Amino acid sequence: MIGHQPIIELRKGGFKPTTVFFFIGEPPTPKFWFNDPMGCLNRNEMPEVYTHGVNPRKADLTWAKGLIIHLIGGKDIYEYMAWWVGLIDAEPRLLIGVDTDEEVNIWR
Image 1 (cartoon, rainbow, N blue to C red):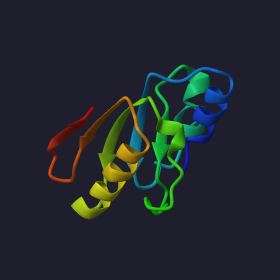
Image 2: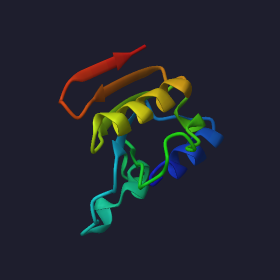
Image 3: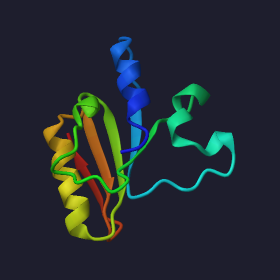
């Protein structure tokens, strides 16, 4: 995954972001320094995490516990649902997702 490491470091310091955007897929190619998802927290932006080809069944999502997560994307509903279930297992405070049919899903 890309973008979760700054969240882990922030949590080690006793802080946590209120909201995280979680994108299924690859990050866009940064054209400028301010497009890099690893630097979102340094720019006081909402953090962005990209799955970057990671298997949702093997992903360590413990960093998501207690956070509001916005799940976006996926090439098909099966990939989306695998990440949805994986994030629910991580016990976020709130999980809001937009699936591949553009349906909004909410878990509390």
